[in-house]
Picture (tube, rainbow, N blue to C red):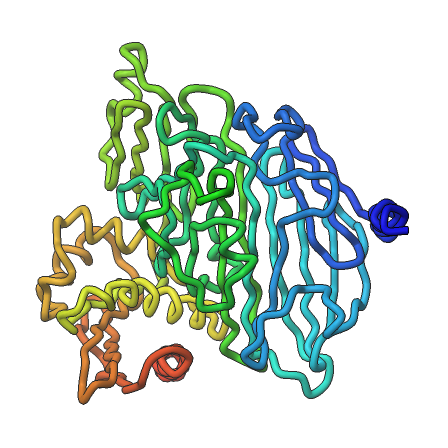
Length: 455
């Protein structure tokens, strides 16, 4: 009798599964239409083995799919599509897979789109279904196929990530198939023109995500490819965390994945920066970076990444530039706030005013060109002459982060080229966690009101 039960369970579950699929020349996407879980594979890869050829990007086990989203609401982390809520619909339309689920009168829609043959966008939209709260979080867990000797390259920090880690202020990174003898296979980035910035990016294992809550921890001593006791190699996964902080306008959360070409040399253009990548550079590629003025670069025995600003192709007239905020706390643990505050204010201004925002990556490139360390600058006047001579934008927003009576104080000012600082300082004190992000939003709203009055 036991044998009959054991045999019948898989077959019973099999008939419960139904899927929606999309395909292009590069990708095949399958989504479970009952719960929204999905897998993505490259059509030219070998998805049936862990030791693949580096082309299969995400886990592609036939059933069940193991890339999924979770919803953080009322201090609980729930799987999108679980029985705590209800499915509204699932559909396929215009090269996109849709899945909508509702909980506590709040609807979450997952959209997986083929943007072009080699590019995919995964996005989430939150809306109130009548009295619901949009103050929730989204955790997207992407289960990656490349199991052993795995690594990421972060151009922002000019480093390679070979072990578990958490970052609070990055919006793009590259995936390589091996930390020892690697080629770049994928470019991940947050499309800032439509998406709220993530709260954090977590490089960890699938097992860690499956057993951890929202406040996940990463063991930086656990390297991808190292052994878990009595188990197999670490199964690398990627976690993207977003947090909605506005009930009325919760925004959109999205990540783009762009497949790298097979060529040894190729380019990406993103957020006003051009990346020229040379895989396995040899003597014949020695001129790959000639005639470039790189803002940032990574050069190893196996790879060269050069990031160069393409400011000359962008008009700054009548736009707003927001500089990374200065960390005056004296504590490196708050360094992540420099870009987080700036990007949050930038996103809020873009959504709630008619002013155009210069991407933060461009602002940072301008600072880098001047060889200025923001952390060593206490007065914006030390910066403005060098920055402003490069272009004529409408406003520059700058500021600092300090600790006052054990609270974080955020101070922001508005500078207008040709006139100087035109406003009194905007400041707000807060605690940490959610209260801090409410404080940042409050600063942004004060800036928006002031600038709208100026217009």
